[in-house]
Length: 414
Image (cartoon, rainbow, N blue to C red; front, side, top):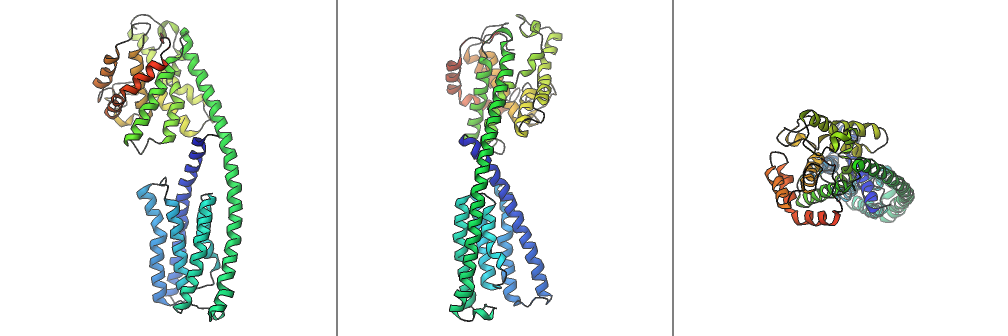
């Protein structure tokens, strides 16, 4: 199992756990609100000023996760530590101001940590919970908030309050650690299976793409180069913070895998058109243009029910929309601007550059300077201007890749 696969699974779980933790805390606040209202109504007999102070402090701690998820996004790595800390602080408020009898609340921070299936976080949460549990009870004792007659002396507090709760918490934490370890093992096994599936998918992709490229016994260099160009462009966009809300490691990995399929629709184009040594007629060109729509439909059928949803969607977008233009004059749908999926806009730059820089069955390769000029001149017209500028900024790297992967010309790619 690769580190990338495991990291992706862990990241997805943490994002989901951050949402769940925020929802649990919101629900806890709602329950606390009901208790507070019942206390105000006189059904409970907790001191009102103390209850009010505890309620409003807890409101801040329990509602902050929802706000932070919106402001920072659920993918922020530090959120899990903050949410466990908020849970510990909430526990400190409860134990030091209200009552010793609600034993279940002592496990609240450890349960929050358990959402993340992290042994490290569970251990940290356990240590923090033990500290605040003891501290809260001692604070309550010294400020006169010990509502139980069994805890009238410090010795009785330690014997009947602090020690039993700490032992209970340790038992709960030990159980949760075992569950976390078991779940982590299952996740690892699932990751291995998922990676094997991705490997099989990639082999199938290469087989399909090579089938298309070998229609005229070429080497498949177009597939290799355009895939590398697309990945390089994506990584540079990520490095410079462009489209940071879309371009993630998972986006780049997915694009690199599906890029070879962008011309899969050419399998349906007759050889007399695909490999014609001269200029295509208008009718022939219309048939050639159909490859993008046909390719997307082919992929929809191939991956129906058998691929990751993000993977399947990106493969469809790259195949269908890589000939759309920024100004809306492309095909098959005439999309414009950011209505064109980002993956297809990236593929368009890579595809055009390779098409003009290599020998074709109807013309010779263009000089590299002219090829880069085509990308520059097409900025804001054919290509997303951000992508065109970024591609030109990595010109040296693109040239190095072209030299390294250049074997024989792809004489039938159009």
